[in-house]
Amino acid sequence: MIIDYPFLLLALLLLFFPRQWLRFGRAATRPWRRWRRQRGRRRDPAAIREPGDTRLRAAEEFAKPRNYIDLLRAFVGALLLLGNAAWGVEPVVALDPAAVMTGEEAGRLNVWRMALLLVAVLIQFIRYEGRFTLYAPLFFLAGLGFALCGFYAGLLAVLVAWIINAALPLTPAGFLTAYSLLLFVLGLLFRGMTDLLVVFAAGVSLLPVLVSLLSRRSLAVFTKRLK
Image (cartoon, rainbow, N blue to C red; front, side, top):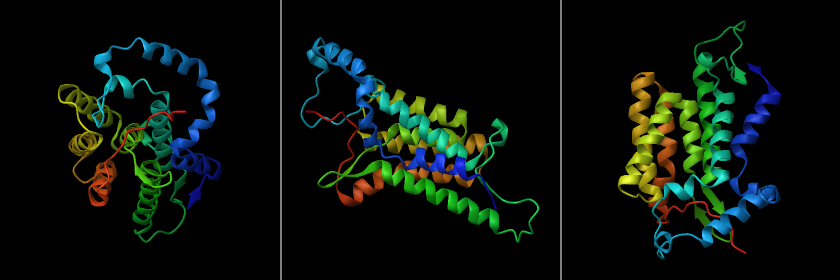
């Protein structure tokens, strides 16, 4: 094995960093939040949510700076972990070409990489705040889709999913279900029918929905903490 330890640590930090820790950087975004509060006071009353309304709204989600951080850190972390020959990115853990291999090492390495990504997804959507709460890491999963399925497959899956949501507003679970199916189909179309990473990407994107159904807890979207 050839391991680039500094970049491996960087990849793990980006992937395993819980989103709620980003609250420690609130002071840097205070002007932005003040502008948003002033803008919110002038908001159309028709845009105010009814109690219990969990449908996604693109304008709200794309106005959250942390969502873009989630997308970028998931993309960069997964890209470092997996590598991409077309983009000239070497994986932080790779097989030693000079070593004698039995043929099973590559499979074990892929399993190890997917296990790390699975743990990263679990950290992002399961949160304990006095009780366990399930969140829909929409942009984090989008970043993984870019890295695992390729730029075009990931981009089309995200765009089509948000277009569907604009026509028929979805709950977080409904959105992730549509996104995972789109990612699966488009990933196989662009990368071939035997690409295991595409199947894995679609599976982890659907995982929060399955956990939500099994635990009978609805998926929530990330919101700012009120004081």
